[in-house]
Structure formats: structure tokens, C-alpha cells
Image (cartoon, rainbow, N blue to C red):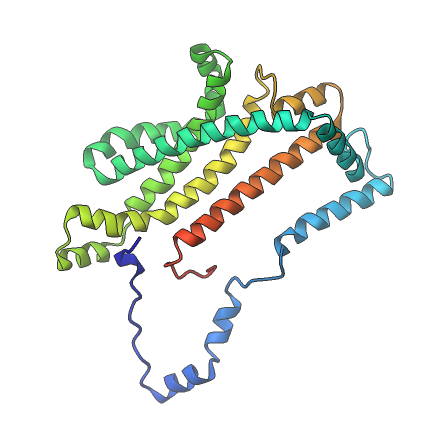
Length: 289
């Protein structure tokens, strides 16, 4: 999407001898670049995870960790293979993915719509922002007893709980981006004679995209966190249900398998959103980019 925001700003040239010397030598630039986010080795962000696994394995081998409270890594892997071979893990994963995807989709659509209406109209802001801020102050999981009274304990209740958490994240981040457009762009649009519709399409919406994507990343993480709780309420299948059943039988290896799957799906979904964000906002010049 072409926008005023993507236009590169003009940089005044250095005319002094000292400025030319600094520009030529690059001495002033190198220290700043050291502060930037450089590309490291492939999968370098997994270094901390691998270190944690190494400490866990060493503690299990040395007998410092009680296997009844925390199973060894190899035991968890064996349990995961057994659950996959019997098809149990796939069944629970499919149920969890379905709930998370439906709740996430509803939450994104509703939250984004409310943010656009409140961010672009005064009447919308007056009617919508207050209730959303009130909901923000109330923990989503704190609404479980009330929603059970209203909706029962079926699938609808679980999806609504997930969607409510997503709505708040999407609204807050998108609304903040919509209402934080630099006033200089407003003045530039007036100078260029842009209509309101063109200004919204070329300036406001592109400017709100970083907040929109941040809302997506926070929402997808929140959806997984909420899912594990709601699946413990009258669920027949799902990773959360599998883990609660394992708790009753003292099966820490099964619980760890469930946590590992949650973590993997959380990291993958966040990585996908970050990739889409980089491709969609390639016009932005940022420290990380």
C-alpha cells in the first residue's frame, strides 16, 4: 500500500570539514550500528532454550530432579511418541486448534472493527472506548462464572472467552495507532489537498498497521493462554483437557508434552505473524529491519 508514510525523509548534507571527515571515515556510524539488532547465526534465538534443556537433562541424569515431579527430557519424548502413535495427541491438538482459530478470528474482526470506528469517528469513540477500557480492567478469565450462567459450558462459551481476550488486545493496539498519527502528516495532507477518504487510506491506515500487527501478536499469545484454562471446563478433547487428566494421575510427562505443544504452536504462530508483518511493512525503516 503506497502511503505518505513511506516517503523517505530528506537528509541535509554535511558541509563542514569535520562533518565530511566523519562521513568519510564512518567512525561516527559504526558505534551506532553496534547498538542495532544484527542478524546472528541461524536459530540463534534457540540458544537459551537449548541451555535450559541441557540443565534439565543434566539434573535428571544426576538424580537432582525427582522424576515424579518433573520427568526427564527423554521420558517426555518417549511419551510424545507413544501419544502420536496412538493418535491421542493429534485428536487433542485438532480440538485445541479449532477452538483457538475460531475464537481468534472472531476477536480480530470485532476488535479491529471497533478500533476503526472509535478511532475515526468522535461518536464511535464516545460510545465504544469507555466500555472497552472497562473490559480491559476486568480479567477475561474473571468473566467465566457469568458466561457459564449465560452460555452454559459448551463450545460457544469457550470460543467467546477466547474472543473476548483477543478483542481487547486488537482494540487497544489498533486504536492507539489510529489516534497517534503524527500531526505533521495531517498538515502535509492539507497542503496536498487530500480528501478525508484519501487521507485515511494513504496515511491513517498505513500508519496504524504496526499497531495492528502488534495487536495480532499479543492476541495470538493471549488466545493460547486462555485456551488452556477454558479446556479444563467440561471439555472432552483438547490439550488442556489432556493435561488436567494427566494431573489427576500424576503424569508429569504428559503435562510436559502438552506444554511443549502449546509452546511450539505459540512460537510458530508468532513467527508467521512476524514474517507477514515484515513483508507487509517493508517500507518502514526500523532498527530491527
